[in-house]
Amino acid sequence: MKKAFLIAGALLFITILNSCKKEQDERDKFAGTWTGNMCFARSGTEYSTTEIITKSKTNSAQIVFTNSGRIATVNGNSYVYQDFSATQVISGTYSGTGSIDGNIITETGLITSDNALYHGDLGDWSRHLTRQ
Image 1 (cartoon, one colour):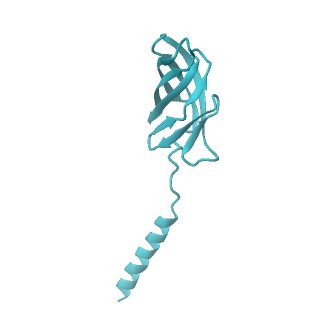
Image 2 (tube, rainbow, N blue to C red; image 1 turned 180 degrees about the horizontal axis):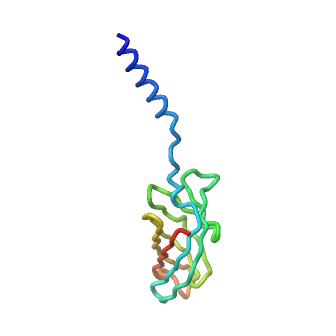
C-alpha cells in the first residue's frame, strides 16, 4: 500500500513539474542580429544587408525586422512576410517567406508593381542571412 502511495505521489509530482514548464517561444530562434546579401534575379543586383530581428510585442506569432520595419508571421522554422513596399534598388510591393536552418536564414519572394510602366511582376528576390 505504501508503494502505491509513493508511486502515485511521484507521478503527481512529475505531472505538476511538467505542467509548470514554460513553453518555448518559437520566435526565439529568429531573434538577433543577422547579416548577408539580398539578390534581385531580374536585374542581377546584389547588396549587403544587416537585420535586427525582434519578437513582436503586440502579436505572439510575429517577428519584426527592426531595420526595415517589416513584419512576418512565424510557423515553426519558417515565416511569411506581410506584404511590404520598398523603394530600395527595385521599387514595388514585396512578398515572401523565410526559413531557418541552424544559424542561416534563407528568404525568397516576389516583387510586383502597379506602376503603369512596370505593371505586374518585377521579378524574384532572395536573401541569405547569417546570425552574428
